[in-house]
Image (cartoon, rainbow, N blue to C red; front, side, top):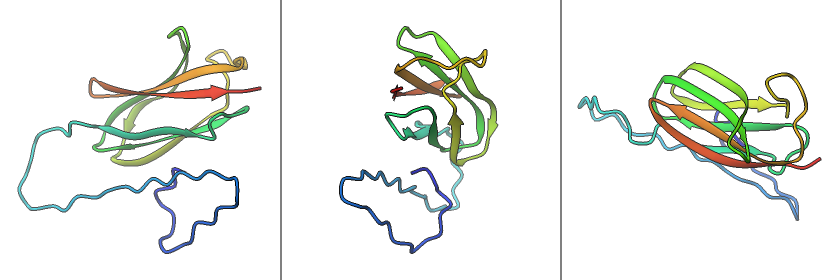
Amino acid sequence: MFDCFAKRNRPIVVNEGEIVQVVIPMHSVNSGIEDPATPSVLITSLGNYPNPFNPETTIGFITAAPGNVKLSVHNIKGQKVITLHDGIMTKGCHSIHWNGLDEKGGAVSSGVYFVRAEMNGRSQTHRMVLIK
């Protein structure tokens, strides 16, 4: 789902009953005129696959500019379960694996979780469901 680097001109084969999500990154054309403004949306296409998942999932997103990205998972009460990444990322497509464990290495229980991506003071949240 989040393979931005896949070879072009390859068919997508979908069997009956399967669900496929296709993310098509959009690229802008450089006009040669500099625009120092920060893009209004820094993180797009935040999602996970599979969803629902058991016991692990891949979280994917696209950053519009390089910068510090913090990716964390929170439970339904808003409590942080784990920080998956906190550091510099380049502009482009990224994916991070979550194995369903908390900060202490314990398996989390079935339920609804939220992945939160933060960059330059802006954030985006996506709902995930763990079913055991």
